[in-house]
Image (cartoon, rainbow, N blue to C red):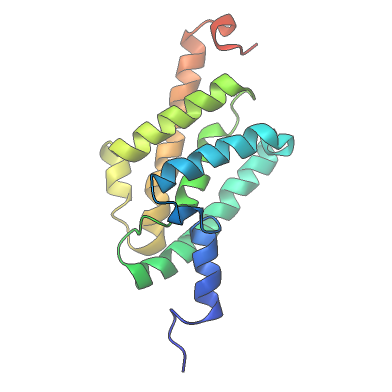
Length: 164
């Protein structure tokens, strides 16, 4: 009988949770996946549709809870190669923002700051068990990043940010 680590389900979970193996990049895989999420958002115009992007956040979160949980059973608590949480959190950081490079860059910077520093509730969220903890802290970091970008866009004149 095959163990979970040998089955096809595990291999599929590993592919999903690592964003098709980008999570194995040797340096800062979470940052790489976040940057790729922003690039996809900027280069694939349909992702700038809030309904499509919200669907992407939802699907990546659901698949992330499952696949992250599978990976955690195999590799231990919140394995660094699991990066679907960065994809989902970064897309949440971009959701309903004005399309454009400046808001996208701000969303990237704020998301990485919150994801790395894990202030208060972000740190508490990662303590949930299994895939829930893997996903929750990044989704919360994405939400905080989104709100932070909105505040910057309210304060900074539009002509400085290139947002009309």
